Image (tube, rainbow, N blue to C red):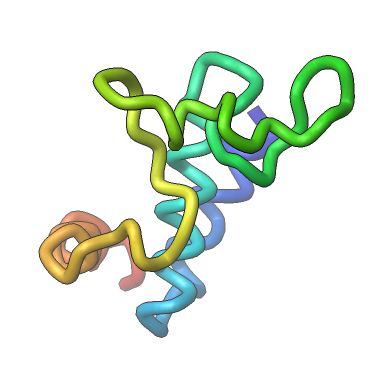
Length: 87
């Protein structure tokens, strides 16, 4: 819940594309139901997820883990959806 509130509060302050990409990444990771959305996350046993992460598995959930995962189109769509929240 705190992560969601933190993400929502970030809407008003996100101005640069890099900041917006970081928000999108945080939201993507927060919405993943398991423990290993991205290679750099930790598994239950404390080890790095690495190749066991959803990011590295084909055909399933595809979390956004890195800024380069976010296309220019996704960035534009996010800005359009959240433009009214900034005012």
